[in-house]
View 1: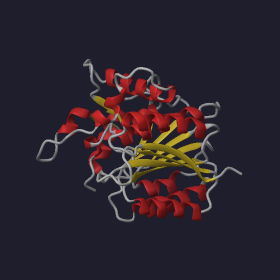
View 2: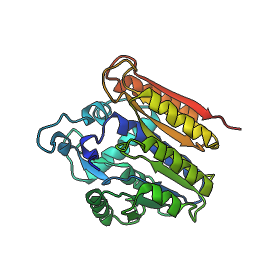
View 3: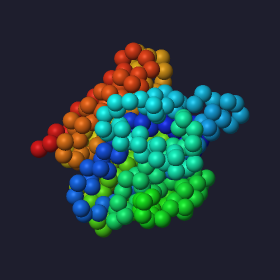
View 4: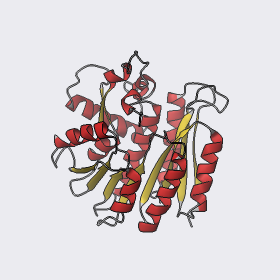
Length: 295
């Protein structure tokens, strides 16, 4: 695997994914019973955004200024976005940044750990050796308490983890599937993993992230999910440019299986706001639709 997320950390796709992830985690906490958070492609856990400007051999243009950077000093954020920005700001300050601009950005596992309660549980999987070592180091610093619960970090393939970890002992779980989409068959792997996960744990909340590049591939992906006959399933998408734009990555989406009550309406308003703020070309938009309606 050649992908290194620190070049992209804090970009528009992270913003969209992490805002919705925090809302899903908060929704699960409406009930006192503990739950599992499983991150199948966890990455290194935290990112120094200064590294985003350093490539393997040449300087790079960092992506975070057009993501978290557009929200950092903005007033009047809607509550779901303000909640996410506050969590990032707390992490950035806790890591020691005293400058006015954000420097340290939490990945999905660290962000989740700052939301979860002590009784909740994290299972984090990362198969890239260097990234997994960094993830272990990140969580090796942590203790149950204000920083959130501890975590089980596994150097294993995330798709294997779905078979190994589910069903969880808590009988409640949020499973984030967020691969790098380097493999040609990654969309098919995600759809297959969802089917396997639902066989083992049909009541789990599954969140599947995907890029908006070629619309035809996304249509096939969503059709494959429907063919598996899942329970109620939402599709939330954020486009920062229209389909006619020349840029390769035009946006991203999140498939949510078994979404919490009222999540649809909240996500629709949130993505509408983010589309306005994070737009990079004409045609930016946010949408939330039922892929499989509630019965």
